[in-house]
Length: 188
Image (cartoon, rainbow, N blue to C red; front, side, top):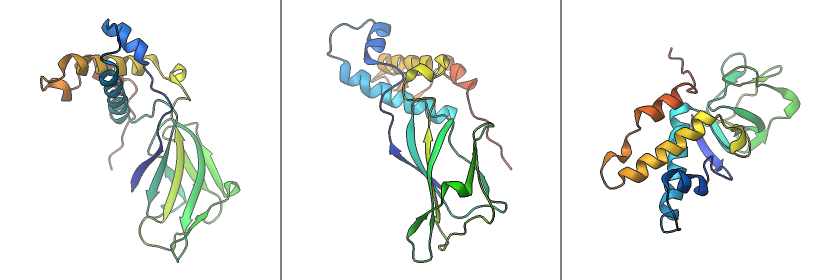
């Protein structure tokens, strides 16, 4: 199983102007560093929380559907599933009609179920591709403020600690902000 980013977020949850105000930086001499750190901080908060912050498109590839034809989607929050494709015996990917699927966005994780007999891929590996649009929305307005602040604080921490070797750590206050939004992971 694998997740591949198809379309990155169109914006970041924390703007450059917000970061500069938070850090009390005037001028544009640190803009590139701050922008890069903010992107990495957002990706880190997403990885630690298991949540996409700003709308982004992912492709989830896996071998086959479990018995019953239901799968829990590996990323949250899910906005939509634009397409599902199943490999034919010759390896070509065939779209599954939307009418043959049901998307459950009520619970978490979001689930995708197939009506009737679930599609069976004609290849043994990576036979199913699910395109997932995930995130709280198209911009930072819908992102929980704790996660936005976690990105802001992590960016500021890494900016202050650059070159000191401590930039690889996540401060406790940032971890605490993320903890309340972390997706539970069930282990069998």
